[in-house]
Length: 270
Image (cartoon, rainbow, N blue to C red; front, side, top):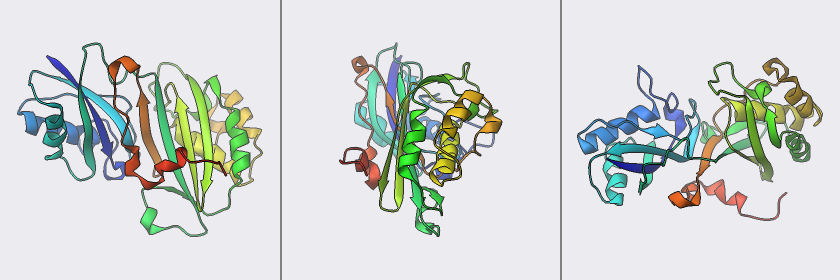
């Protein structure tokens, strides 16, 4: 058996999340159907991170095992021929048997794109979150500092979360303004279910002036979901990258496919 890893992008607005469900219409269902059509054999995928309904994938990674021998580009073009336009395999790479899309990963990075305007834009529906009030970016940055490090993130955990522990190590949160947009980047060893969206809800409360920056520390210390803000919308959330040990040679994600991704390589911050 050969182990193949794939880099996958998808528009999450079109699907009921990643994980396979009885009624279908998930990214996993569509990808496995396309692989089955291409290989004429059943294929079961393992994913790095199970995204929710409406959450997008820029740098999702999956693996599967197969007895078939194909060149790398065939594992890209073959499934893509059977996938809807809202899902695309970006790269394929043979992996050693000890590679695991989920358990070999040591960090994940999410982006959140937020549109700030008195009125919503139909051109950004499903692609960006939206708030109609001005936001204090400096206050949000100050609030985010309270979350950096290893903590019990129970206050930002959904009731459906299946993680064995609420302790996660959040390495950094970056916040940048670009015109009418505010961009967020979250990097951690792993995330709880709805963790980024629940943190976003609190950051927006603080950025809008309804809460002080120090409130974030109080929410974290409470370890109670009832003390945090409501879960923010999924529309602007993107799984951007999954980090693996260098020995596996996992390709960088094709984040350049979204025009705003260059903000994380531009200087200075504003």
